[in-house]
Image (cartoon, rainbow, N blue to C red):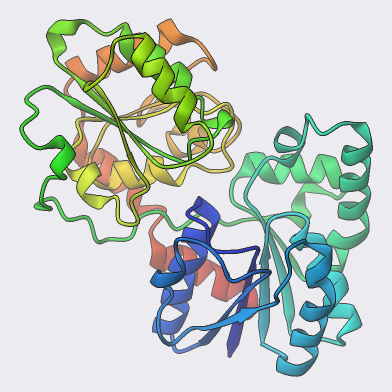
Length: 360
């Protein structure tokens, strides 16, 4: 069948990466794939497989893409539409009804919306809740990428929890290259390499991570690498200068293929205030890299099974994060156990769950 994947654009975020991975796996299973974008933009555009058709709705705003989406569904009638991220997850079911669309509509949320939009005010929250309550029931399947998100969505939409299906993100690709060439920025460094991967935005709390790193003993000779790009770069650079960490904290920018960074790291740290899932944790585990993460809503604790597969520390606690990092660097992790756990989130397993849901 033809499967349409609807996302706003192809910026370098976790949701967009996941959709590209699923597109490749759906192709490998003999399906045709359209990636439907509100606007054809983003650093991941050059990673779209040649066999995938990109559909540009030509919309700068969500509401401007509604009627073009109706027209696409009416004319193309794909066998399934998988829409990701609110408000696309409420627009898509309505557009399908207007288009007299005959396929299955799957909506997929990747973030705890009550937290993600918690600071937008009561009016925004009321609109979001009302839209979910009205539109979610129109979808054939409602997917959450973690159990925590499923509970959050159920509470927001006033729908029973059992009406939400949990399908984790396909973060383990089975392509870990342990012999990857060391990135130039890490070459020649003799101390432990501490890595984090994520957009430079406030919710990731890279400022807390830098503060925690500054409290590690100088004798470790450690390097912190923050792989990503975003709005917080200037503030983080100022913080690095203020703490005298030039050359010890690296901001290499966005990496479309972060595998070599994982392969040459000794510890992975996630310092976020919240996550929908935490793809990067699984990516690190696939390389056998030990993990320290904030115990944030809602994904990391599920991936790490409450601390069985990595250390969980309190949100915003600089001392706890620093202590967790130091203990992990001085410990002897069971790297094979981490690799086995990562396989639970493998691409072929997750893609099959989506296909089973589509064909149900």
